[in-house]
Image 1 (cartoon, each protein chain N blue to C red):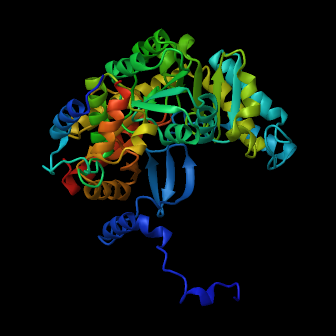
Image 2: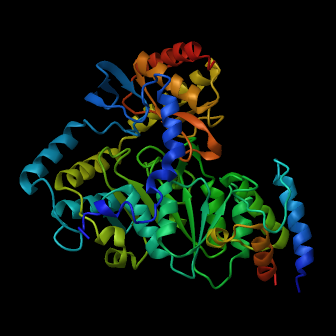
Image 3: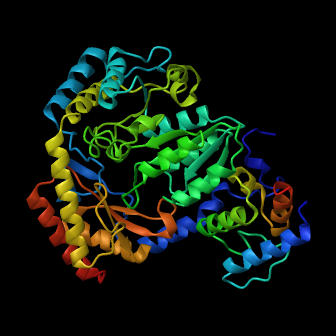
Length: 80
Length: 413
């Protein structure tokens, strides 16, 4: 059983490490447009998320995830 | 309604110009060219004297960015084979390999590849790009997984995008990152690990001796792109997988005729017992015209000559080591600490200075590749040099002198 609130806290912690521009992060925050992450940052961040939750997020799945909230939902579903 | 569309302008809602998405690139290009610099992506070779010398802008220029590793483009036997095929078989096949486009020469070049790699199956495509997209998009299906190095060539990523497998990238040359991902894959799923022998931007080599056994341990098939190593690396020139002793565990090797072989075309070789079926199911093989007879004849002749060209391989290694050391001693920052292939990449601080240095080298009489994002990793601008087995010792000395002068002139060293 994966608790959404717990996933959210842990993901916000990870996002924080890569949030070099200090953008205020909420569930509606978009990775590309708001956080302005380039492809290399995305790769490192995704690897961190995968290790943290012991899951795989394929490129196909990444293409569907634009916002932080969508990532939380996806991780909750995959980690179950 | 006239049907010309001309009178619709006033009534139809204004749609965006589809070219708007290219505006940032157009702006960047205009800003660069407005400084008066020669366009680095629009060079014309007016005459080609040899594998290592051409005339550019009326000036004799040493070629140090052609991938012509083994210098086969002017080999007399290769030229003769091409001429003979052109006369006997005509200028083109006008057809697909599976219809009217397989001539004796296509069969022969596939035989040459089987001899070269000592493998049971060989399939020739019209370009290397088509070999990667045609194989990858076909063999990895919907419920299969592709695990690939994130610095893989565009043709590998495009092959993934054309198919519908699940795609999982891992950090460049990172063995641990590969294993973590292999571990998490569903046991029952089909798996394809895609690696390159030499990565073309920095000229670094993959730790295939670690990665290939790892992939096998997790039940994956392995595809290695040896485009930049075939002909040069390994005792028989079969590539990095030969040099590192893991070629027998590689399921598919993909390569090209447009580098060491010195013409154009792509191929896949394999020992898979059912390999031949790919000729009927790979769209990049079926739905395009086959290579002209002269091209496959030059390729077959070149491949058979490269097979035994040990002295040239040694000379190319000597050239690569000398250029790498010379550039390092001059104070340039290179893509690898040690020379790992025939590609020596000089890292430039930014695109503008990269373009200035590129132009200064051209004025000295030296051509190298200017490489920039998205082709390069981590947003780098590179001056990519690729050596040829036909570069003489004297030319390598001249090249170092040109780099020194251009580097000082542009403040890069």
